[in-house]
Each structure stands twice: as C-alpha cells, then as structure tokens.
Length: 223
Image 1 (cartoon, one colour):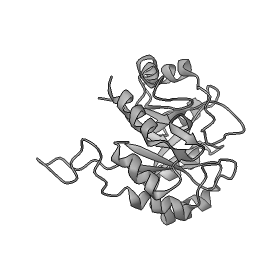
Image 2 (cartoon, one colour):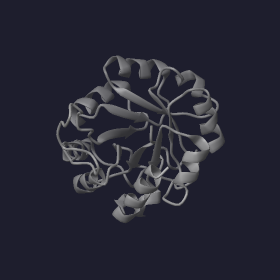
Image 3 (cartoon, helix red, strand yellow):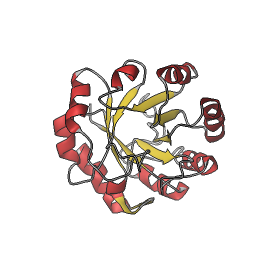
Image 4 (cartoon, one colour):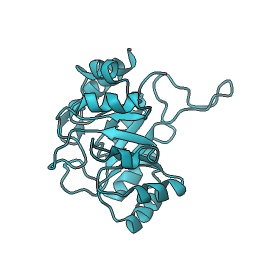
C-alpha cells in the first residue's frame, strides 16, 4: 500500500480545495492556536471541510464506479490543549471527524474521543508514546519545538524514533521538515503510514505554493 499524504496548515477554503484536487489524502487545519501563523477559527475550519467535499482528487473517480466508493480528501483538525468539554463543541461546529492532538491530552481523553467516533492522531515523544500506543489511531512524530506546538517549524523530526514506532507495529504519521526533496528518503527510511508537510510546501507561513504541493505529492507517490 502506498503512503498517504497530508498537507497541513491550510488557511482558506480555496486553498484546501486546490490541495484536494492535487490528490492529498488529508488536509490539516490548525484550529484556534494563536501561536501559529496558520491558525484559523473554527468557522473557517468548517468552510475548509465543506470546500473539499466531493472534490475530484487527481486519479480518483468522483462517483462510484465498479462498486468502489469515491475516496474523498479528509480535513484533520489540529488542536493544542483545547479543554475536553470544548472539543465536543469544536467537533460539532466544524464537522471534522479526525483530530490531531499536540498538547497534554490524557490517554483517558483520547479514549473518550474515540468512543464518540472520532479518529485520533496523537503527537508523541520517546518519553510518552507508550501511554497512547494502542489507544490513538495514529502516532505522530514531529520536531520538538516549544515555539511551534502545532508543528510547522520546518525542523526535521527524529526519523530513528519514527522508524522504531513503525517497527513496533504502530501506524505512524511522519511530520517535521518534510519537503519534495527529502520526502522519498523519509519514506524509504521510516516506512510511515502518512507523510505530513507544512512549511516545506509554502511560499510564506499559511500560504501554500501549489507547485510545491504538487511536487511533494508526486514524489511521495513515486515510490
């Protein structure tokens, strides 16, 4: 199975729609995290989610053919330490069904989200990953930078740690400093389930360069 591709830090519906049309499997929206220049309000996250509904991903049919359903691009809500009681409101208002957690969320909170039918991706470290292993749907490895709690720092993550997690049987999202030049090396070395790019496909923070997005997706899928 080929690696899946996520483009993170989209900020506008038109941008999300263009990324979906280029074939991204996932688009990340950083929701209400003021420290990030890519942060959007939940209303904008809803607009991005609605914008990609029914978009004809490159190489994918826009309707059922031969009994195979159309594979839609999904929007991932990226959040940092949102109080659990507010997460329910965020899910309802955005319509997003995948959450990427970058804060101090507890394993119990992850379990409760999953009980509500939410797919959970959890950013982990060497020190805490065992708390979430077997609970979160995906374990995300990103560069550790306190100034960029939701990613997008451009720093390369610990590929050896990511490879360790893959070797232990976990579905890994490889993030941190990926671009069209190094994504193939990252895939070859780590064998992640998903590769995730943000600053590596931008012309400025929050402004995606569609030529870079296209090259990134193409290179990721070429292996």
